[in-house]
Length: 182
Length: 89
Image (tube, rainbow over all chains, first blue to last red; front, top):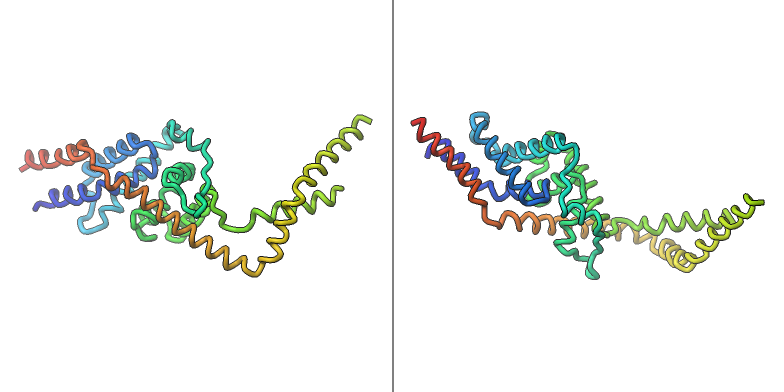
């Protein structure tokens, strides 16, 4: 098998995860697949820049991510699709047993900033190591770790999952303030 | 005169709002006072539960897309490299 045939076979194998990563950035499936298509075209045009034996997944994810952000910068704002508008209106609450409906989860997830969505997807779902995620996002491993933590806390809050008992503290403070003003 | 009335009115509504919350706040105060020692442990437990819940749902959402069939247009793009290779050789 020629190098190019092997490269193609590896690409085909990675297509499903490339699509899933794209979907976490661009929620709209058609826009996400456009990202994948542009990524494939760029990858093929730059195939000579890929060093065989290195991490093809990280290389492809990096191309897709950079393309997404450059498009985002061009448009100055994220394309506001109907789903996004719906997402902004919906507030999700966890079920009685503490579980979360997957559709509610997706709605909450889409309300996160893109850099939070990408680290959660890379580290939480795609099976990337922190090192791989750092390579893809072009930042330090420590940055990825703290970003994952912040993203998780934000998502937990959007899902109505309490991380702390902080909710009772502000009302206590308010009560003392009320008493003082009387 | 007008100013005094406005202040009194404002104060009244302020007190009213505080009064309405009293019962609820007392319960919350008790909860905070009685459970202080368990708080750190419970917070850790909840944080870990939230973390696994989030990871589970991230994987479900990701898996939904990876289990879809890959659109033909992607394979067509990849097949172009075979053709261009064929022309070269």
